[in-house]
Image (tube, rainbow, N blue to C red; front, side, top):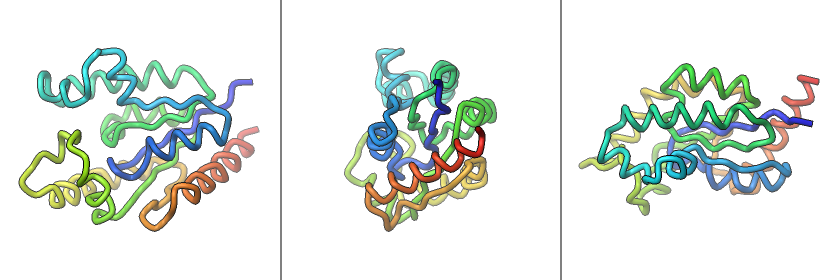
Amino acid sequence: MKMPNLVLIGFMGTGKTTVGKKLAKALGMRFIDTDHEIERVTGMTVNQIFRKYGEVRFRSEEKAAVRRITREGNHVIATGGGVILDPENVCMLKQSGVVICLSASPEVIYRRLSRKRNRPLLRTENPMEAIISLLEQRQPLYRCADFTIDTSGLGLDEVVAEAVRVYRVRTSEDT
């Protein structure tokens, strides 16, 4: 039986990939990360796409990846932080399953991302300012989720347990 997907949206650094991998194991589903899918198909890293072709090309690749991935069920899908910028992506993701938004405070996001150098949108003089600005722009768009989990003060297992609970409740309502 084809189960609905469990889709994780949210800002970068909220834990979508880490949580998604563990969620997939817990639910016996396949894990797929839209950024990794883009890299697999294009043979380029997200950073390389941004540097060579810009954000418009990346968003185009992202939409194509979402289209491919949402055709199937039984996936836990971790999306890129900006996937919700395109209403078509949101529509495809919502039609494919349960959408859970992972959130975190700007301070927690900054702390989580400060060790990483692979975030093109944060290559700026003041990354904290960029995080706050992008969060403010995107916050209304993240409201498309069926449910939101604030990961700021939770451990990985707590986030996974809550996401499993939400998924099971939402998918049992549909049957």
